[in-house]
Image: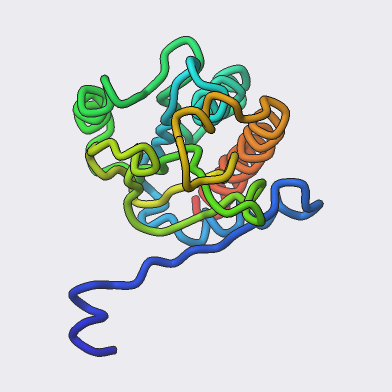
Length: 196
């Protein structure tokens, strides 16, 4: 490892296609391996808005997880269709999270645009996410880990593309991510029981 690697560590990224049969398990295992401090709270920040089909992926994931919140032991969910975390309230929500969950592991989830061949890809990465980058918004970076879901093609009229994204793919990807996060919660609980 050279000085450049120490000062500017490379981000890890893995890609999974949402309809692949083993995607749920692979996503959950990857997240569990990459969570920096397993004994700390895991805060899931689902970024987006219910006013745009393509950008509703994050809040959909949050809503699906909140509907199952009685079964979640290790995940704290911020951002749902009823109470989205978006560009206008992101900084405020980050302050609330840092007060309620100091030193937590933060997992940021957001939709993104990409190549035609990447639509349907769920990207897991280490390090912070830059929400709003596709539509040239300058928002604070967030997270120790992130999940980006490629919902449509980028390159031209991004707002219009997000507005006209198929709800079907957004919903199916949101379900896949929610299933993976429920499995992550189960895996973390299982490990905590084993270490007691």
